[in-house]
Image (cartoon, rainbow, N blue to C red; front, side, top):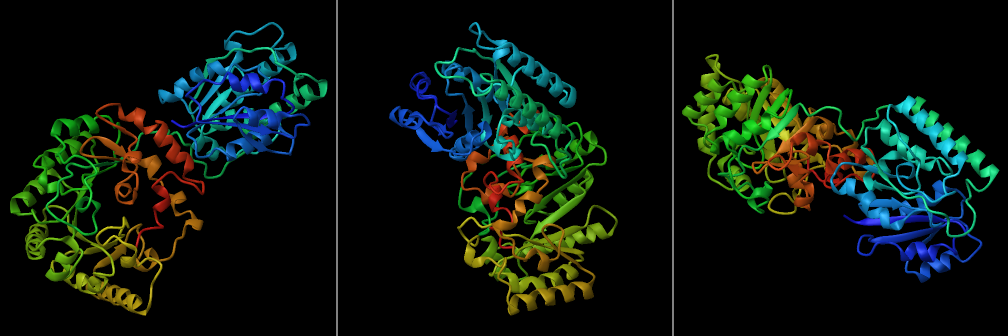
Amino acid sequence: MEIAIIIPALNEEESLPTVLRELPDGLITRTIVVDNGSSDRTAEVAEAAGAQVVREQRLGYGYACAAGAAAALDADVLVFMDGDGSDDPGQIESILEPMERDEADLVLGTRTLGSEAEGTFLPHQRLGNAMVSSLVRFLYGQRIADLPPLKAIRVPVLQSLDMKEMTYGWTVEMIVKCLRRGYRIAEVPATARPRLGGRSKVSGTVKGSALAAYHLTGTTFKYARKEVKGERGAVAEDLPRELYVEVTNRCNSRCRTCIRTYRALEPARDLEFAEFTYIVDQFPRLDRVVLHGIGEPLLNEELPRMIRYVKDLHPGVHVLFNSNGMLLDQQWQRELIGAGLDELRISLDAATPETYQAVRGVDGFAGVVNNLRRYSTLVNRGNGPRPSLWFTASRTNIRELPDMVGLAARLDVSEVHVQRLVLFDEGLAQLEQSIHGTLGPETDAILADASERAESLGISLGASGLVSPEESLSEAGPESKPWSLCHRPWTTTYITANGNVLPCCISPFAAVDYAGLIAGNVFQAPFAKIWNGAKSVDRRAAMGTADPVHPCERCGVYWSL
């Protein structure tokens, strides 16, 4: 965990050397002193002690804190501490402990819970704190005992708050916005020490005390009554109702559009039935369960049993999976229908054996077509769900889309879906294969031909995102923040065959840092704790910003379709 400490300072040359010397060794990655318009040697003293100095000429505690934070956004956690010596640097480690245990997003070093030297916490400070604490409890439903200068907050959480109070109201704005958005706040005891020099800019003057009281109470009221349209809390109120479970990560294809062909992201294994029930039992309600991931689900012989279990446990749940169809013989067809499967998707990607092998890396086209023909015959007798065909489009196969529609009609399949190719710079998943944002006369004609054939044959032709292929192909650059519309961090989770919890089924393809994707492991911690753990909360917090957590910044931008 990368820790940066931000020390706002105005005329603190007398106290800073001691404060900086007392910082714990080996804990702080970066030390930033923000010179807020000092007339003394504050900046020179800080630089001499090895600190990075940021200059902010606009007077105000909030301005200084914001300037320091802007210089340290590459850190994981920011610690704020005054430069006058009234905070004890030795207590930074205890401030960080709730974050290290993944129990808090904001930690307050609460002086009223700790010890204090005589005269350090003046009567009017106590009165002001008590008044604001009572307001916070009344308006936001949680007791906060102090508005301390010593505090720690995770960077994605701070970025999501869109801080506005640039003077005395910075700390209370941070607290009440965290409360409003459901972030976890912890208070730990902190020592209040006498200043090492100078006079307080707040409690040291009548004017400063009056202004502080005005801003603190005003800010507390303002964010309680202010409506925030479309606000989604970074802490999810409910567990997801849509669950992706990768029942196996083994596969019998060598698809040139799949990252599994080129990289072993996790050890190969099948999910055992007992493991599946252990996962599913942790969800009080499920509306949709998807039993695929990076692998071929029909390689797991327990699949029908899994389908029956989740259907019995959650009546009305919609269960589906995507298969390459190579193993979909008559025995599998009967078992899947008997288990109560609701939807079967077949990835085909081609209308000819030659293109099928070029895209999917195996000679399996004829076998899949024969399996589909038999399955459609079985379904037409009133048994089981109708299949749909899925076509991952690239420049290698886009010319066969119209013929794919014709093939679907001959197989009595009523739906064809054009799926997005996720670029990961290997095989066919490279920029030169991309169609997204590069439509020309030839591609326009292909799409028009496919749409006309679909309409004449009674085939439903769609694309990812429940839109038409033409809409899906429209340009979506980073400036449009396509990730900001995603609902999955609040509604959906994806669990691999090894128990790792990932943001979604697309993320393994788009990620540069796969290990960084993993929010936790359900065989090591309860899912509910992972769902609102630090990594999950950070991802939600960043979704509405211009700087989402990786790989969400690639979503909708680096897909070819």
